[in-house]
Length: 146
Image (cartoon, rainbow, N blue to C red; front, side, top):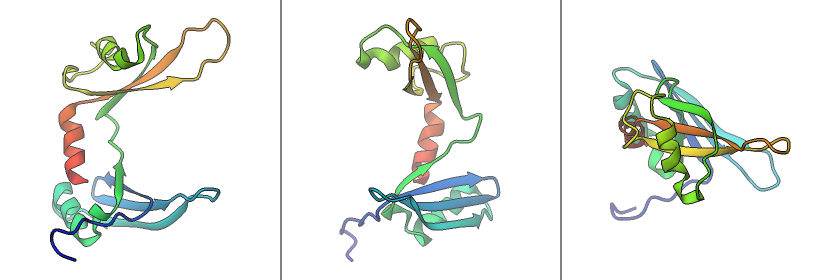
């Protein structure tokens, strides 16, 4: 394969989980009508830094060939249950950004914010959402690994 050939994606998703002195990998394949299949599950020691280990794994395990996901450690993100803002859908994240002021210790102007609807139970109850946020620099740092 030449240097200009696109990387062929392997089916499924590869979860990358840094855990202190180890990095775990799990490749999961989901097929319609079948249970998810774990195709690969492995753990690697972090010999120097997490970044160095991920760079080594990126090459050795061809991480670019996978759709990758990761989990941020507790403390690097915030989840808050809030009343759903009464605004159009395209304005929800911005409205929640302001609702989160005072709840986080990073600048919300540049934070990554997303929203998950909480299914309503019962008539007449206020709709609620989970507002998920993280400092932009921490999200960018994770993305550079993948």
